[in-house]
Amino acid sequence: MKRFRILSLDGGGIRGIYSLSVLAALEKSVALHDRFDLFSGTSTGSIIALCLALGMKAEEVLKLYSEMGPYVFVKSESENQAIYQNKALFDILSQKVFSNGLKLSDLKKKVVIPSLRLKTADKLGVFPEIYSNFDNCVNKEALLTDVAASSCSAPVYFPSFKGSIDGGVFAPNPTMTAITESLKTGVSLESIQVLSIGTGKLPLCFPDEISWNAKTWCEETREEKICNFPLMTVFTESMAQNVSDESQYLLKENYLRINGLLPEIIEIDDVSKAETLFMQGLEAFSKNQKAIQEFFS
View 1 (cartoon, rainbow, N blue to C red):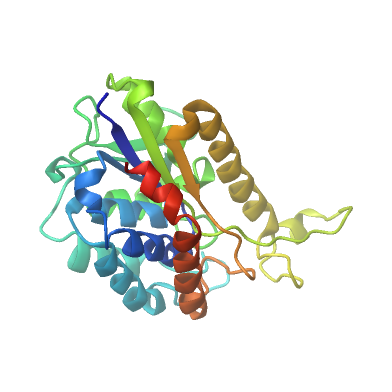
View 2: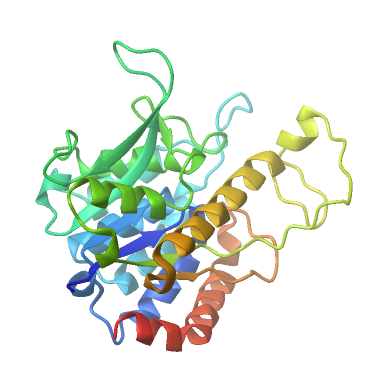
């Protein structure tokens, strides 16, 4: 049976360096663009997935992250706005990465990128918007820059982009989204094989019992070993793990997850931890090298 291989990449801001470190080590022996049929990513994972689908090397994207982090994470002047503005990210994506008006339909590899639309012209409510270049998708002519910017617009951290926010609010780990979209096109479940790469598990340490008010659950300032915006972090961490558990049950030996425990809390905007993330990614690759070899055998 011919395999339909999916590379699934979690969201996590600057922690995408962890994922890229794993991928850069992997591509020394595996041609990523040739060995995967579909690239799926949420938030920071969407940038990486689109770059790889375009034919870029993980090493190139890793260099890009090292350069753009300090420019993207510059705080807004007003406390009443998102912590950061998305202009720097959009400019880098449109001028350095996805220039010349590249669209999803220009990609030779299939992609699945989750985002969340806050409103439409004729409907109230919120709507998961799955960007893809499968033949049956209505948004396959979307610009790559717009797709990535939409999926990367994390609430609190960045403003919405053209009415959309980060896909991580419902699919921080996009594996099940990628599987579902593939099944819709006639790909058989038995043929699907997924390599899912996270951005590192946070070593969260909550008190035995909690009676926090809304402000404490949602505030930026954190106590030792508890992250910024703990409610949002609990949601994304637990959803990512739950999707991984479901995918493992569904695909069994055709699912491989790489997402090691980080040695410390690393926030999604902490560019000072780039080297730590890179080394943790290398360690994760080393620990999973045998399983990775079996995945491609």
